Image 1 (spheres, rainbow, N blue to C red):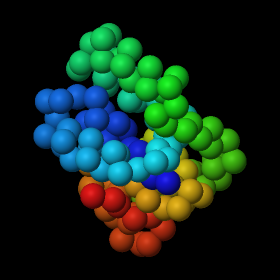
Image 2 (cartoon, helix red, strand yellow):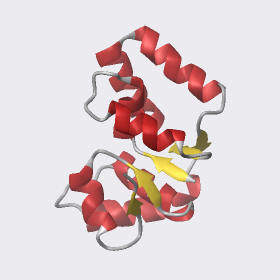
Image 3 (tube, rainbow, N blue to C red):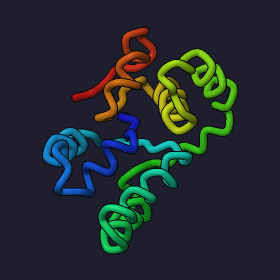
Length: 131
């Protein structure tokens, strides 16, 4: 199982992203893809704003068709708070902290192109960045 960060989900949909081919290749090797529910708003916003309604509809169809499992993460709130407080200097926001908490519960593998934030946390060993 791999937990997919917003940057990777957006790169998968947006062919103009420099990481598009890399995201396609990485996710084609994964049978189970997981998105934290809190990331859906962020992903949808960026797709709609930069790619338009057509690409947003493609993403929504992928969700409906089961391309991703959605993790509600309601039990992760204490861990999210712990991460936000620990990494206040990054700063690590709510969505990134939720993704890390989600990944920790689900094998620790994360596909992201947001290396400055996730690289620091991965360096402590609770998650592993997939390339």
